Image (cartoon, rainbow, N blue to C red; front, side):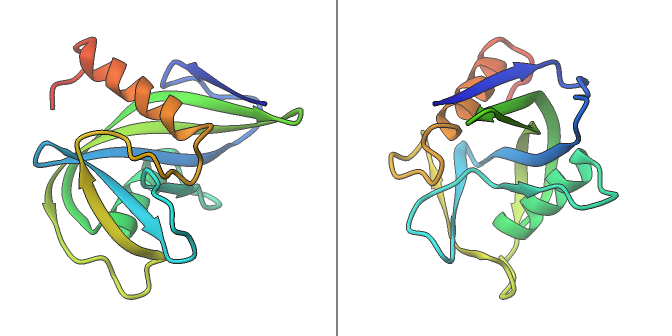
Amino acid sequence: MILVRFYDPTFTPASKLTYSVITAMYKGKWIFVRHRKRETWEIPGGHIEMNESADAAADRELREESGAVEFKLECVATYSVEQDGITGYGRLFLAEVTQLGAVTDTSEIAEITFLESLPENLTYPDIQPRLFKKVLEYVRDGDICI
């Protein structure tokens, strides 16, 4: 069983942050990406590199995976995922993308799509719906308007 927990955006866990995940909206639709090695859809995101902040990783990953050129990025929450007694931490972001460019040839992303809701065919079906729901609650509760 996988357990996902949410914390204040400024929460810093005792262990390092590993992931930045970016729910991104462009022209009223959510951006989802498909990795070259998979047939499933994902919310853009990835590993935080050594000596990189979660914010910098979110900026980099969104650019690399979606081709986003201009956007506003906001941290929604810090989150943890516990599975088989191991807990990892990440930061969840919301982006409003106003300009897209091309996804580079060197990207690990095969394609992007724009949808009004979460797709059914997800790479991480035990985690991504919870992250997406948290962002929808964040938007609904008026913390940000997109």
